[in-house]
Length: 148
Image (cartoon, rainbow, N blue to C red; front, side):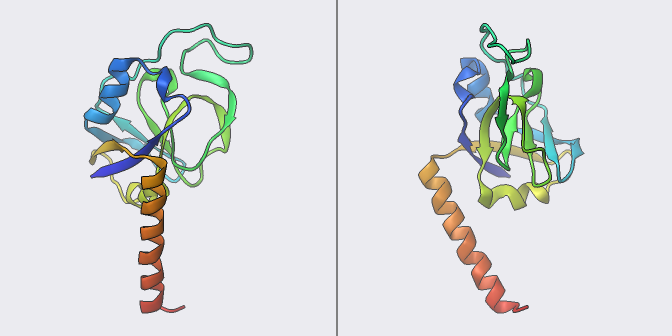
């Protein structure tokens, strides 16, 4: 399964090797998977470039001063395993978001089972918006077939 991702504000803070690994390796859904978030395992550690942390951020390079989290955002606490925040996740916190799974693919994640494999694929914002438009058209067709 492929999950489309718009690289995020903090993607450039990954090391070059980690940034390449994130999109080139297969990841498996861990046992920690629910409406709050899906933890992916099996890839290499996603290390962040070392830097002096700003006041208010934690000591780990994956920490930031608090920020809002969109649904589908991907955080990598301590650079270990990516976690995709799902529909019941917290709305903010102090981990860098390396990207966001596009809204059209969130239902795919919701159907994934532990140990199921996936790969993340980088897309542009324009591609993400086009995918959402297509997804909404499909939903509109379904709602005509199954009126409430």
